[in-house]
Structure formats: C-alpha cells, structure tokens
Image (cartoon, rainbow over all chains, first blue to last red):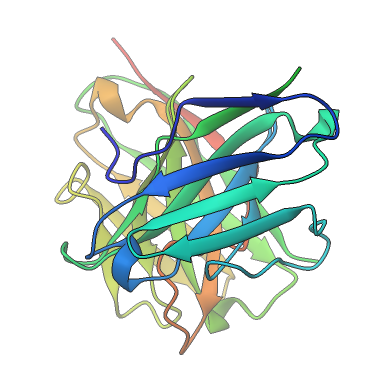
Length: 111
Length: 123
C-alpha cells in the first residue's frame, strides 16, 4: 500500500480536461515538494512536473501541477490520445529516515 | 544529451546475488545524486535507494535495507546496486534515475531515467 493516495483511474474524451489527485500527510506532501511522472505503455517514466508546479522544458503547458496543504494535483487540459498513460506523484517523507514515497499511480484513459 | 544505461539484470535463485550497473553520460556525473527505482510487472513505482554525488550519503527503502548496497564510481561515470539475499518479491524492472544537482535537496525528483533492466528471482 502506497504512502501517497491516488485514484487508480481517470478518463476523458479528447479535448476535455482531467485532474488527478495525490493525497498525503504533513510529513510528506505537507512539508516537501511534489513531483509528477508520466509513464507511457512499455516505456520508462518521464518527469512531467517538479517542485509542485514547474514544467521541465519540452513538457506541454497542457500539463500543470498544484498543491494545497497535504494534497497535490495534476491537471491535464485539452486531452489528447497520446496522454493515455500512467501518472505517478512522488515526494520525500520526512517522517522516515531518508525515504522517497510514490503514489500508487493513476491510469488515464482517453475515451 | 543525458543517457543512462542499466545492465546486469537476469534470472537468479532466491537467496542469490546480483549486481546491477548503470552507465551514465552526457552530464557531470559527480555533480548529481543518483537513485534506483523498481517496478514489478503490472505494479507501480517503488523507490529503492539514493546516493549523493560524492557517495557519502546513502538511503534505502525498508524493503531492501540490509540486503542491497548502492555505490558509485565517479571516475567511471557509473552507478551500482549490489543485491544480496534476493527474494521473489524483488522481481522487477530496475531503473537508474538521475536526481537533483549537488547542493539541491529535492527528494523524489528524478530528472532522467534509464530504460531499465529486468531482475527475475525464481527457483
């Protein structure tokens, strides 16, 4: 069972928006930056959002991150077929001695 | 361009050992922390271990502490994971992942990833 809680699935039609939540606690999300990863089928994960809201170069601005308290969110606007993938949140857990924690992942399906 | 290439995976009996390697190029290797992250088939991502740029600081997930050892050779631009006392539940694809630059504390930040190497623990 993951320390960070994500919904197992989310879906939308092309052009729609979808939001994925990532819920944690005061010792992880509440006091550390959250990062998001996209994993396309059969490939390695890719950094999508870092430090809660920042996009690496090359990541479309359709992807955005936010955080409030002990929860973070990844929003995808203008959904495209190539966005169909698994999405993971990650952060540092200050309650454990040097541990990174991931969410369980959310499968986004483009209908 | 950053490139990370894992090697050393394979089939090993329970209780056996394996050493994974990750060859890095395209960046100043010693200037970045490095990590190992694994993924069992059909499952989510699990962080395994972290090592600082100098190699002096190391962290491990509880599931591997005492059995796995992370190390690096900055002269060879290489990262390693020595895995001992392997268990069935260690079966996974193991990725090496570039962390933040030295001096920047960003736990869970993995900028670049290799393509992974498959470790199968089975009798």
